[in-house]
Image 1 (spheres, helix red, strand yellow):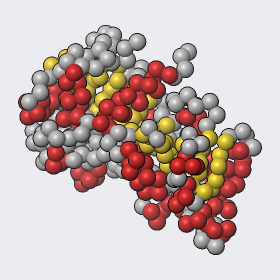
Image 2 (cartoon, rainbow, N blue to C red; image 1 turned 30 degrees about the vertical axis):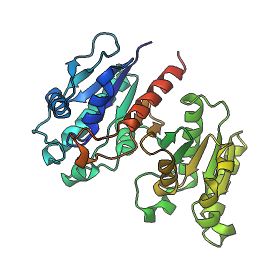
Image 3 (tube, rainbow, N blue to C red; image 1 turned 60 degrees about the vertical axis):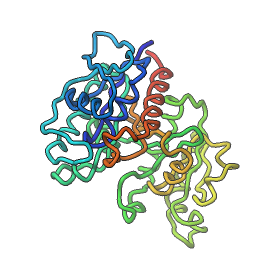
Length: 327
């Protein structure tokens, strides 16, 4: 069955358009629909010396021929030069995500794959934006979403996402941690097909608190939540010291790791699989994946950008869409 997948290229001055154009060079078995400016995509294809044939999505999804790409035309408000950020396009970038989200909510597309955006330029013009994960949660009014990065060897989920490190301890409460674990557990079953997920849970403090001598969050928050959810039948291990959790022996029996904050777990995953990992949001009413890297402005239009992560993100979206339960 041919699927229709929405793709937002992200920051137009970055490598997002390059990666998408390069990906369809040999065609694609599913219909990838770019939400963006056709003229911008055509100009970038010329910069890259690649053939690109743009067409509108049809009544039914159909695969892409070599150099073909479906597009929902959303003209950019200003001319775009590769590598040069423009304040005028910041709000438009968010509009492309909003339009693609609406089409996923309506069922027009089965999944959303997002290219890298530049948070700095978006916030510079006065728009509140901490990341795709939080933005999509607000757009879809999702009560709880969970950010997961996945590669062949490892899946890492986050109890907190894009917040300052100083705010992490107060952000991890019993209700919030319980909600995150429930979404992660359900997502592993429904999206990844893991019948009985086994999740390793990091402690927040060094040595997982050392029995309360290095912090009490493990004793007062994390352990009670894990005990409650274990009583419901979840296979949860922890809280474990993060410095010894990411060892081959422990990971060999795990379906996912839950890290307490962004830079606790993601450096390990990116060391293992940077450029071939995908960012996945669980808890949304549709499938969403993304690349594991930024806009790489210095590479835009050069043909030197590596499209491995975008290909991985789309592959994950296809796999999850094909394995999801049917009504």
